[in-house]
Amino acid sequence: MVRTFLYLIIAIFLITFIRAAIGLIGKGVAELFQPDVPDKARGGAPPEGGELRQDPVCGIYVSTATRVRKTIDGRDFYFCSESCRDKFRA
Image 1: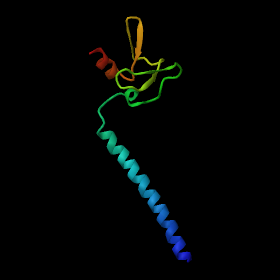
Image 2: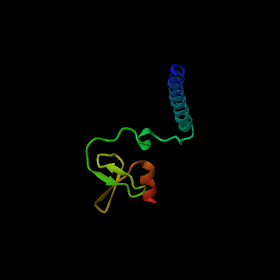
Image 3: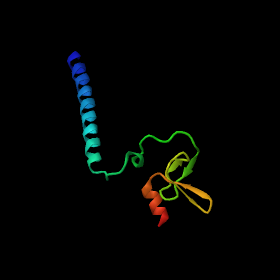
Image 4: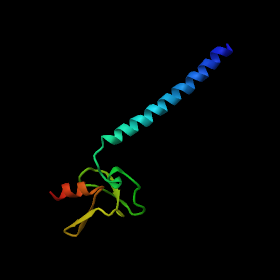
């Protein structure tokens, strides 16, 4: 009985360790295949303050404190990245 309980505990620890290792390896491999974009476009530290507005291109809500914006006819548009702003220009 004690031996079975000990095997169960060891199995739980091994499974947890293996899952953590696979997760770390998977995250590292995923970063290799991502395009070379700045951390800001990947969702780095969000700007502090400001109200949220929806990006007209991709639909993500961004803070009005963001540096990526465009004014057209007196109306401000806020974007999550420069690439969304450039797509909106076209």
